[in-house]
Length: 123
Picture 1 (cartoon, rainbow, N blue to C red):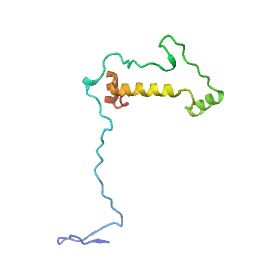
Picture 2 (cartoon, rainbow, N blue to C red):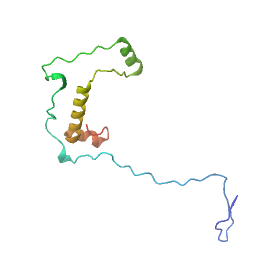
Picture 3 (cartoon, rainbow, N blue to C red):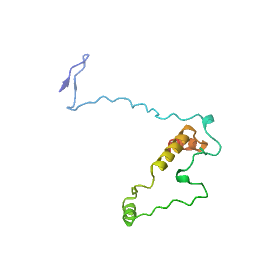
Picture 4 (cartoon, rainbow, N blue to C red):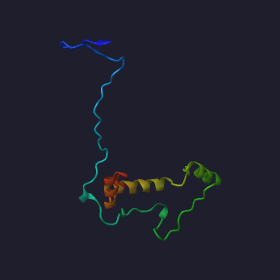
């Protein structure tokens, strides 16, 4: 086909029979999470003073025990991951949520290294 849109006295150009697409500029990436300013980080010990579940006393109470089955071990070896139901009950899940929320609200200084290097967010 021939392009006759604007020849200005020049010979019309032959156009290939292809579809052209409009190329948009890349989308601007926006952060979902706001990183704290350096002065907002916690430089001391990161202790949210939370009570551990099930009456556990740190460095006193023996670790809770859980026995893996042969099927769970085989799944772990084959897939690299295994879902173990019932290890974290509602009390543990609430503790973990509270501890995570505390770290996000009061990030430790070392969280800065992860966010600055883009290796991970916050915690």
